Amino acid sequence: MSTKSVVVPDRSVERKTLDSSKISVPPLLGASLEQLQTWVKEQGQPVYRGKQLHDWIYHKGARSLSEITVFSKQWRAEVANIPVGRSALHYRSVASDDTVKYLLRLADGQIVETVGIPSFNKGRTENKRTTKSRRSKSSERLTVCVSTQVGCPMACDFCATGKGGYQRNLERHEIVDQVLTVQEDFGERVSHIVFMGMGEPLLNMQNVLGAIESLNQDVGIGQRCLTLSTVGIPRRILELAEYKLQVTLAVSLHAPNQSLREQIIPSARPYKIDDLLAECREYVKITGRRVSFEYILLAGVNDLPEHAVELAKRLRGFQSHVNLIPYNPIQEVDYKRPSRDRIQAFTQILEQKHIAVSVRYSRGLEADAACGQLRTNKTQVLK
Image 1 (cartoon, rainbow, N blue to C red):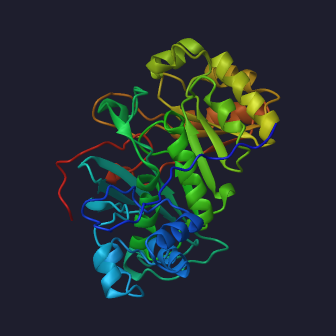
Image 2 (cartoon, helix red, strand yellow):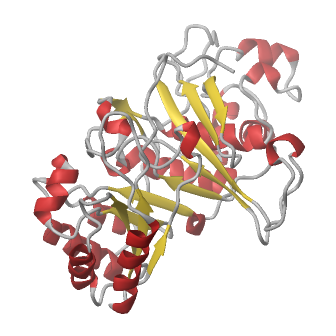
């Protein structure tokens, strides 16, 4: 099967008499080097300006073309209103573990969340958010949890995002912007990206694929450092497989059988768990890459020994890995996090059944920045 390519929208502008205040132009963020070179040439500028524009947008944090001092003052004035595509910071909070949550205000006033998650060397005690000292690439990383939609239509019962409903898909530049925002705030390169924020990525396929392309080729983050999470949309996993990406696919399973999965994820009713897993197996065959399964542990709901046994049976012989995630509380529901003993017992059963498994305790819990806690909230004020 041949590798599919991402369809990239035309970002060129026809140059007659340039009045940037009257021209509707897609934001430049998300455009490739070649597209930017074509664009500057069409504005009567030398091609090398495209390389400068690319560098200033992706690596120097330019939020307006008027900031790009290597351009002439005259041309900067002409293109001052051409949008770069950066969002505005609406709210920022820092958890005790140095995880940072950002609420970003988009051009249409919608609010979206993203999270910066730093990892440190063992034994290091200084406050990273104050010192911003250089990371050790061999032992530390900076992960960004990005959103792909404003809100989410999947309505997982344990998740705050779905409680607020769905507004719209994010554009390619709005996804890339989240990574640049975190990178600039931390003052260091982002090393890993997880598409696990607000929204269902496979319901916004083309913009997500475009963002992956830009984050890889323009920002410089390797595809193997990207993880795309999905609840599962019929036929979309196979569609994703055709692109032969090197990203990690993470499927939010959360239950070992259809009836329990429908209880936790009402939107899963039309997509049977057997069909979902069959599609995942085919994904492994096509891509040669294993699938990760996310499993939120809810006390007394899906964390019993019989659930672990049933899950192991379903995943036997599967090139996969299970991430167990103890539930992170939200106000709307009264689910509880299992005890450590219950979590350990569930883990041991999977291990005994030869299922690759790990427990992931979410970061940023008290800042409502942990898995399942992201929500649109315009009432929070800028700090």
